[in-house]
Figure 1 (cartoon, rainbow, N blue to C red):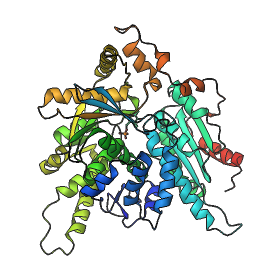
Figure 2 (tube, rainbow, N blue to C red; figure 1 turned 60 degrees about the vertical axis):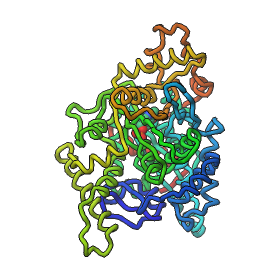
Figure 3 (cartoon, protein in one colour; figure 1 turned 180 degrees about the vertical axis):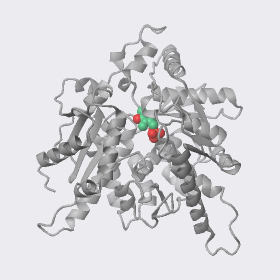
Figure 4 (cartoon, helix red, strand yellow; figure 1 turned 90 degrees about the horizontal axis):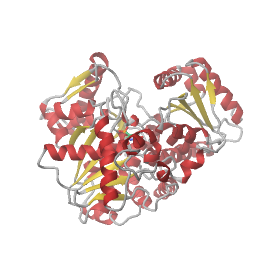
Length: 519
Ligand SMILES: *Cc1c(COP(=O)(O)O)cnc(C)c1O
């Protein structure tokens, strides 16, 4: 299995190149040359596998044994998912049997957010590649290393830090806007004291932090000298890791491998739901609901075929991890849609499949030029029909999000098992209800991906439940011991008094020197 760019100018790349490279050289995203197709016997054999063993099987279809042996993949999977607190890693919880509604809890990892599933794996992969490269070096030869630099408005930073802490030959610098991430998120990041972890609190906004990171990567000399690396949500290994829980939840929730199932996914950068799309292409009979908040570029696309940036920029909502202007991973779906709707292949074409691949890349490249230059593009009816064959979508407002947290707390309390949805999960739950009200064909079992523990989003949860109709609610009772313990822990964080690239460069240089790294 090799990888190509969605924009067509890179192909035949190895898994290692795709993972360490992140973005393809032509600005596109890496996708596999072909999506593995599962036969009935394979699916049947997978049904009873524990999570890490299932992950190993899936990974081995996308990573040739010549690159990473199956035993090594098994070791990586075992280590990556053993940090989860639940024996099932990602358990399914029934919200209401009568409503055919379940939640897939993705928040049992170290930082109580779904991003742990992917970043625990990615951290181990980075280390694996570096250890292997360095083991081939002669004594005295300089070691290869990676300096991961990223900006966060909250969840990505903490999951990245927990994925990379203590990893050999990897340093990580995470910039956050000082005082503008939630207290829990700030505590999670800054209480990690491993030598290779550096938190940088920038006086400014999240956009300032992102601009600084972009400037560091754009500085060729700096990027090369410090071997900068990224762990963005566009990294192929993150998508791959996320496919596992679609299979796992499907097997836990059905009796046969041809039972249709709907997954509702609270969506921002389209990484989580894209993994479901790959699971479907591999052979699971899934339908996907793209659930957005008020930042609804994707909902508008799936309804109209127009992908267009909102005129008024990003809105702040109760589900901040989904506050996006454009969705970075959407480009991968666009490639598959363009390929399927590709025009007739000329009869004399020697390799029609390769022709379709090239067509898809050309179409995607043009769409993304239009997005850059005109703020959007519109796809034709065949492409939209392809999208709608697999995806439904709904937009959920802030008021609906809060009402949904309250509604389900009340209903589950009455049933004797109070359950608190986090605001992102509530968007996914409400999207199912809205679509069922709107259409006749949505009554099969729906599984909503629960992307964060409610204790991480105290403001939203408290405004839904404190002092309202539910008098018994006690926020402290839902706070896990691990989160409570953070407040008393020692912290380490470097403050940068203004959003200035030079100042951050100096922090990186000092931080690496403090680790004893010479470059
Ligand atoms: C990142 C995140 C999302 C959105 O996931 P995408 O892959 O960006 O679509 C949803 N909920 C939470 C809690 C997140 O951290």
